[in-house]
Amino acid sequence: MMMTESTLTELEVCRKACADCYKICIETLNYCKTQSGKYIDMTMVSMIRDCAEMCMMCINMIDDGSEFMGRICALCAEMCDRAAMVCEQMSDDAKMMECAAACSKCAQYCYQMGLQSASYFRRSSLVNEESLLYSCDTNNHK
Image (cartoon, rainbow, N blue to C red; front, side, top):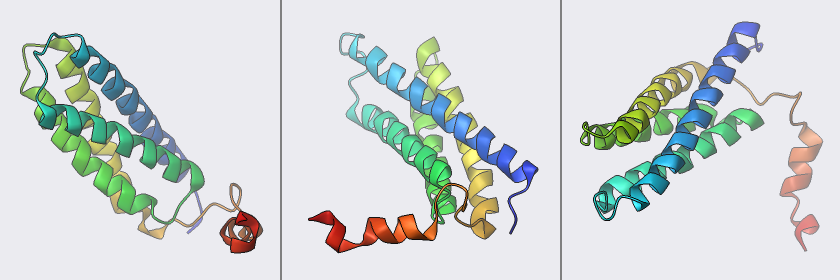
């Protein structure tokens, strides 16, 4: 499948949603640390941290044009949905609701990217066969 302008725009929008979600999740984790034990629920903290990590992985897969991007985006969508649900439990806290909104938005775009990316291929403009083979050559890792 050729990478159309529409496809590239969708990738950019998904990447931006992941970057925004990552940033807000990290800010929220730091915020939770300042709340004097109010937000020490390890399930919540772990879910937000995992969401941030998965968003970063999704960004990396999009940037690389990885053939695994679709599956990573689908998993990212699932994790973002769960993080949003956890944050929404603190509906009286504006920062937690900001995090929930960012996670929900990211989940929406990642879900769509997961559905659409099955026919994408590694973008030759970013990675060529020689560099991929070189990076996998065990003789170069001594």
